[in-house]
Amino acid sequence: MNTTKLVEDVNSLKLKLEQVELSTKEQMAKFESYEKEWKLNEEREKELLTSIGNNKITFNVCGEKFSTKVNTILSNRDTLLYNLVLSKNFDINKEIYLDRSPSIFAILMDYMRYHEITYCTYPSKVLYNLMVEADYFEVN
Image (cartoon, rainbow, N blue to C red):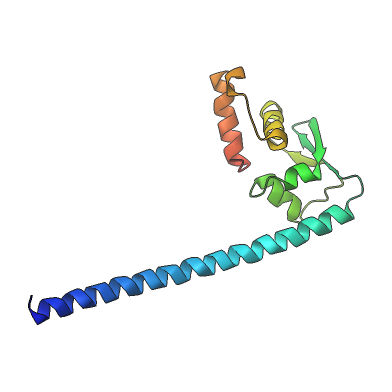
């Protein structure tokens, strides 16, 4: 093996290592940002749970009302409802209006409570609508 080829290989490996190092630093910065956000959310959750009087939240979904415990929403992190409750943009002691499908919202609320859905009990059109609404509400 000649010296020129060896130097090229070492320089190529050095460049790849520098790229990996940069990528790792970027990922670590992102994880640190997520950690800060999670800690802020945990503090907000504690503050919220101590400040609310009735420990429930009511959603008005196109005229149909759904009430659930705030803990149900807070136990489903990274969902639209979780972020909505923690956002301080809404008074959760008052009902929150959502312009969505009440029949599908009921299924999503049951999923958020029990963390399971019996798919075979629903026709394919309902399952499709459920998929659309789950995507909207960021429920995985």
